[in-house]
Amino acid sequence: MATTTNTEHTANGPPGAEKMYNESSDSSNIGANGVTRHMTHEEHQTALAASRFGYGPLAHVNTANSGRLPAFGGEFQPGLYKGVQDRKFANPAPLGLSAFALTTFVLSLINMSTRGVGEPNLVVGIAFGYGGLVQLLAGMWEMAVGNTFGATALSSYGGFWLSFAIILTPGGFNIEEAYTSMQSIAAFYDAFGFFLMGWFIFTTIILMCTLRSTIAFFVLFFTLDMAFLLLGIGYLHRDAEGAPNPPIIKAGGFFGLLAAFAAWYNALAGIADDSNSFFIIPVAHFPWSVKGQEKRKEKNERATV
Image (tube, rainbow, N blue to C red; front, side, top):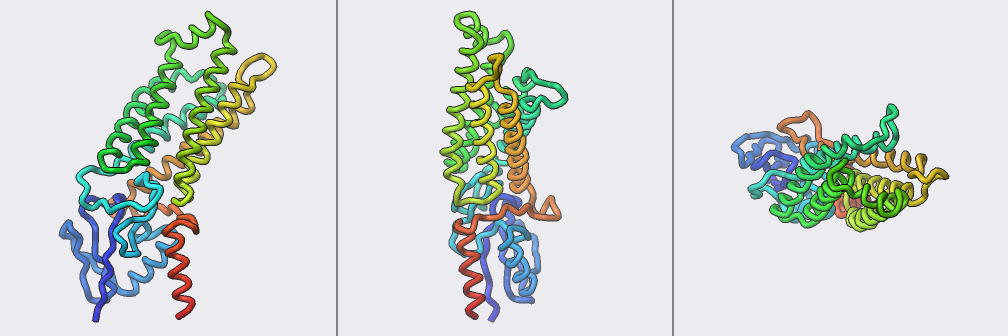
């Protein structure tokens, strides 16, 4: 008798493209989109083996038949979550991740004084339009699809970029000028350092929620957390001339650059599927995550056979 394994795709697959992967060599697999696909028993076993290492057509598939999908950064989900095949919205996470990544990328290059550029004026426009507004909208759409973590993180970092742009808008809100006229530039640096340290605390809280997710997702928030910490220290612990400490600011910029690429990586993992890519992006689950525990259990079961 042929046995059939029902699997659910995460939203990195096209809408309505959930499929039945049959372990029989002569059974056809028909997705909800009406496309018929064949997967032999050998192909199914090969795909399952590949998925244990985070790649292949079953890499982001619920293989435990539990109705809940494992953590996936491309969906901005740090833990088990419900299947999304009936969702009426597209996956907003890659949009928010991309908005965050590009804005962080440009600011981090400026913090590292790349090619002698040290003024962040250009970032104001990007922070208002892309990193701020677009990421905030992505966070609101995450709320609509029921992702509390994604809504909290993306909306908050969208708010960060909007507030960052407001603070540094030249001649607009006169925030920096108010400090320098009433006290000194050192007071502004201290206040901006407090601002960054507050975001370090928030990011640490978010980071703790990714400890049972994937390595790619954890790396994103770890590098971002280090960037906020170093930038905050750079503004609070200034050099002999009273300016933000250049080596520490550059170190913060370096971690910000890593965070930008990690965000783009997770965004690509959420966009790429078998309809638009020749490969699925590996995300590597932690050994102590639910997916990791499933892999160990399967390995032990194979060893005992």
